[in-house]
Image (cartoon, rainbow, N blue to C red; front, side, top):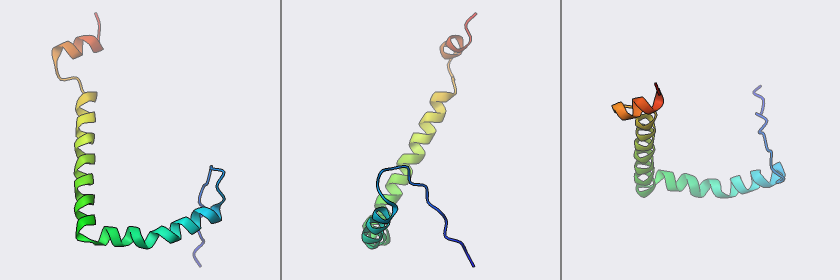
Length: 74
């Protein structure tokens, strides 16, 4: 038998309230993701996240001599 995973709730909101809210909004979330518009919105969001990730990686790697000199002062 599979055990139910214990969720970690560090808020003042009781678990049963969170579960009831989740059960109430789940059908709407599912319907949104299954619609064409929802899939398009998700694809756009995913592209934005990938662009942000690339930008943050570029910012983390100094690629110009002036940035290198600032990173490693003499």
